[in-house]
Amino acid sequence: MDRITAIEKSLTAFTCGLFGFIPFIGLIPGIYALICWAHIRADFRNQWNPASAYLDCGVILSLLGLGASFLIAAAAIVQFS
Image (cartoon, rainbow, N blue to C red; front, side, top):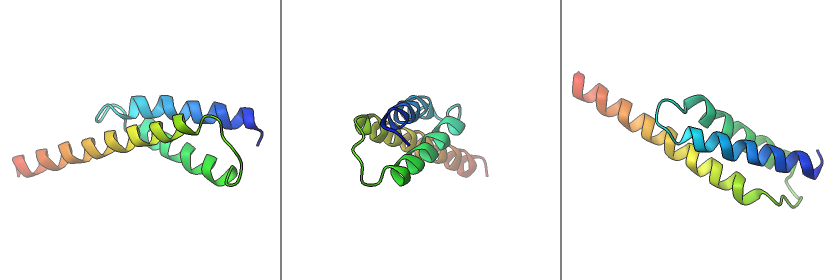
């Protein structure tokens, strides 16, 4: 992969991470952001990625959104059971 592809995929992961931050609505974009993060980290292991800050922020946002979705679902299950 070239550096332009890494930047584009990093920004895609950031955008999906932003949408993934929304509980339940952003489940699929959040999971996609994690997949993009894994692919970029594997393909660019020893290379400089100028958009790595965006990549990391996107992953953090998607993890927060997925965690919030899980906690809300767990609380609803406990509440209604």
